[in-house]
Length: 167
Image (cartoon, rainbow, N blue to C red; front, side):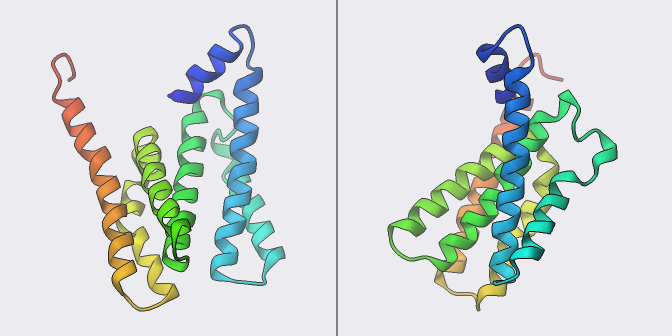
């Protein structure tokens, strides 16, 4: 729960930084959803914007704005950004693609470490690359890196669960 701790360390007497983090996560989810929609539907900027805003708001009746869910928002933002970077690795060449796959892997680890609900989505996410072309070497590299990142967090969680005093 990195952002709980960071908020507390930045201001021990109020929820100001907690709320700033929440606003950044909301804005980040809008932006990354916008980018993702444009990857699949180039030129549909209005649709991408509306989708981003709706993704940030839905489901507003289930405690999206409650104080206890900052880790959920950070995990969702990290996961969406990891998917975007995975697509960028597949499309780009050179050093940008290397940075994209490294960033994607780290963000998957961060996301699944915060909130494991996306684990089922993580299993099928690399297959979205098939939308952009036939399976090739880059597809195999991207898929392997994605699954290796997910495996790292799963192995860590299994190891942590077997530590003494954990039931």
